[in-house]
Image 1 (cartoon, helix red, strand yellow):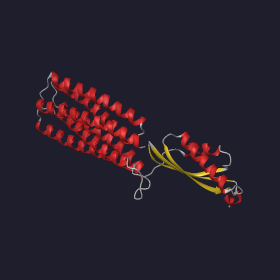
Image 2: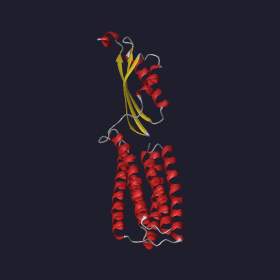
Image 3: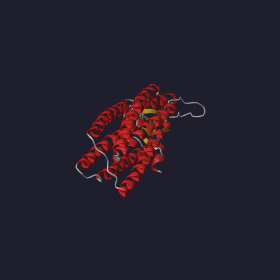
Length: 292
């Protein structure tokens, strides 16, 4: 897994600097044009950059090998980084809603120029490329945090489109659409944050990752396996851990049963590329006890 973590960290560094550049452009021009929705989108991009930094730290910690203190490794730091990304998203929601309420109260009007549209379209293009790249590479490297950071960046793309709609409405003489669009942006960000939070919680709570019904037939086709039960899985999209129980003939020698267990382990790992480890528990097949 170490080469994957290293590659993912390099990608996150590029994304970090791209998000900082996009945030600077939106916030600078949003302040100049007095556009709340544009400033809100800039804050969102700034939090994108902060989330990418947290994700990089999470991957750095997750890449450290197992040792006596952490015999199972530190891979959950990657999931914790994804959890932190959702927190950044919820913070941005709060800030955007707060500023939208102020705009409704003051009724200030944004100064809209052609440059406002150009800035938004250019930053949308950058976000679109970055978001797709992160998600594709996240699937390639089986990196949970890359996929989630890509979703984070994708929410920025949708938010930017909403800003353009708000700018167009302001240009047409409806300036109060600007804070309304800011609230739409907050809703988009909140939805993505909830999705990431839900997935991270599943991993941290060790929820099932692969349906046992998909694993059992693979194990049962191995010579010497008479039954398979208690199949359990946990982990994230790129590192799933499996443990299961198999029954072998009671007269089978320990050496032969050990070979069957290794065959079951290999079969599961060959069938599911995301599986990092399989623990097989051996039991003698005693039908009379099962009937009891």
